[in-house]
Image 1 (tube, rainbow, N blue to C red):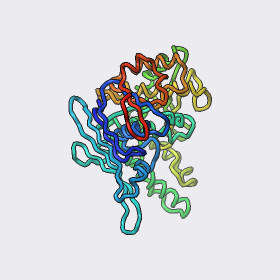
Image 2 (cartoon, helix red, strand yellow):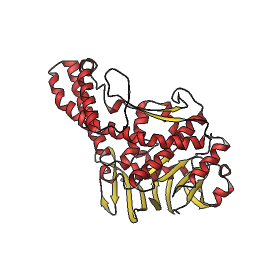
Image 3 (tube, rainbow, N blue to C red):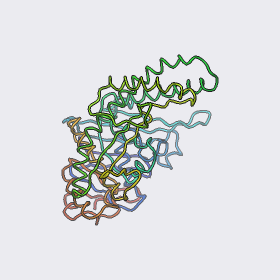
Image 4 (cartoon, one colour):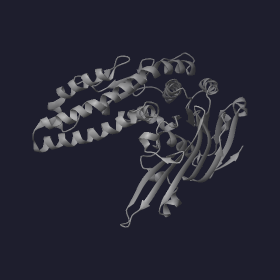
Length: 390
């Protein structure tokens, strides 16, 4: 997978950027709030059609462009995948109707043909690391589930559809549970939604568990290198498909049929509690991902340097896993990756980056990189949303 050309129009604080990207490492250098991270955000949006900065697509549109109707932010990319050239265009559009109500939507075109996100996802694949990823450990399980969803949807056929269907079913089932809790009624109405929840939920759980089973040993190997063999890393997937426990460490290589059986039994065992509380208590919407460093849960303990090394290891392992699954190298995106790690880990990381087909990085301080790394990279300076070769 290679990103050859990128054009941005009215995206974030960028009026217009038009850039040809080389196969080697690219480094964007500049002060904060100049547009470096916005470039990474735009590239990652091509992979997931979701922003890592905001859940409101409206915020992707340049502020002064919002004075127009329609207001449009546009990302246009030329890429190469399996020897085939592909052109992708994503438009984020805000329109105001006759009643003065603004509505934001997105359009995705692959080689000029409009596609829904569920059909377009996976066309471009990318791995992202940004400082905000600390929130994976500091915030709740929903943040870690979102990370899993964005990763798996890119490379596992049908995952995005299963997730969308599950969320729809969950909303309907919760609405019914709330009504039964408040007004009473026939709880047998839940049978249909139970079947649907099991059908779609089992696909999600199996995909997550099996993906993490494959990523875990790669992450351990990468982490050992980055920590100079001083620390061990373990990824634990906690699936809330057991009625009696808060989580279950799932066995290796589980099958969807196995998860269906366990989830079906869990729903039956949870029935009285769910009717009393008016909410679905088991299923992949309650799963969690935990990172353990030398046996210590990094969600509870660990320095920022340890957490960052563990998260970096997980992301670099994600790169290799995606490559194994798709036979394509994802484009790797790293934002301010050198901050808060010591010199030895920096050196190990730079050696690791040299193995990737295409890596795009940002920094406020080019001196954090070795002269040799800089000499083998294309460097651009970013200022006021514009680019200049360094």
